[in-house]
Image (cartoon, rainbow, N blue to C red):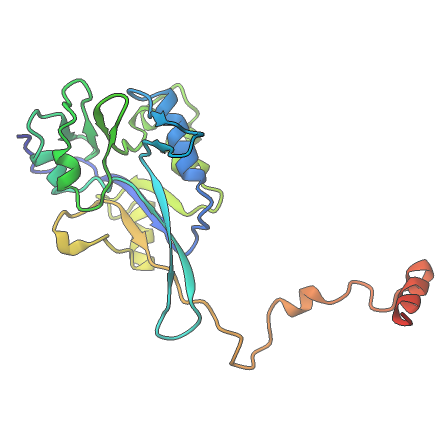
Length: 251
């Protein structure tokens, strides 16, 4: 079995803003592309265009409709991947030592050369963040794009996980959550970032920023803030447009 480090120099991870995520799946596509073309063995697909397609993904987005106690129902898009836990059960259960947590940055990785595909780590992970690649026969998981973030051949702005770099809504943030002065730590403190399923005791590094309640204009009598934007640009049409408007009114 693999042992966990007593401490790590950094705690690199993600902060995901559930208030901003629009569920576009750009993070899923970019993750699939980068990790298929670069790090480790490709993420395979089976019968991709057939009746029963399946494939390996390191990041998925789930959507849920929730009903707050006050206000209208909300559609919440929930991205999920490995949370790089401090007390990662997927590491300690691994019989070959293939799963491990790095001391230098806290990233949880899989040494694919030592993985026997037994699936114990997937059973141990309470978040369902590991997947068995059916073609390669090894377990796959989010690597935080370790081959990007330290790659000095890339421009500095590209040295972050592919999902973060791609997100069009700016809902994903990357940094050192072990540093209370980092941008991601300040964001968590300001917005009340939370752990996913803290009762599991895994101490996940990744944090989620909760969605904020949406205003309800249906029953309050308030003026719709979009109403001014929907008014006609030219209320008194002239020329051919004015003639056409009058002609249409008579129909």
